[in-house]
Image (cartoon, rainbow, N blue to C red; front, side):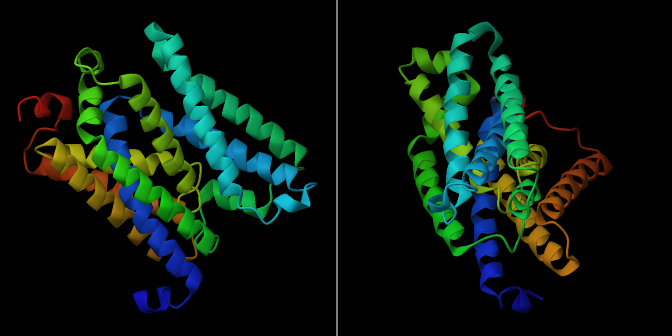
Length: 289
């Protein structure tokens, strides 16, 4: 089955991009879930859509922009939106959750306006909404490979600081950890991963790939490091199985990836119930490890 999957270059590109996204999305998702910021992925995915719609709109009149990958404009908007969100979180210190709906609603509003000005949807934008195997180009592969290498290096370098900030931000800052710029760097990394996931998973489904594997991993892990391991294993299984099944069944890959991830989560939850094990709450458990 995989032999014919690797016969075409665009499928090879999709497979390797899927491997990278299947690693990055759950790893960042662990920090996002622990920080109770799951909705941040929805906000940034919608602001990424705004950037892509803006690129497609202005490319209609600016010929020099047509050969440029819209993913770059999506990344610019996503990073700008993430920094604005972090700024809002610092302004509304007592109501930090306000930052997410502000960015989410702004992204939807601007995106709809740009799509309307562009006279509706086209195939390119549809592919970004739901993901597409055939839309992944060699240029996408190299761009996402660079993003993966850079973010993996930063996560290894800042692992302890990110872990400390995730569980007790105030104590981490008192201990001398520069929380402000590390939080800004973390949200930029999240924005880049969300923008990079557009080709495979699609804007409307990318948050699922960051959250569902982590939700399943919480029920299996006995430590924070195990949580990363299980989340990545479930993420990679979801992406590869979803891509292959979507290709052979002629379905949207984003939808299949999410269905596989959701199925794995349900298997884990029902498995624990059938085994007579209680459902786990990771924040409580990690304090005792």
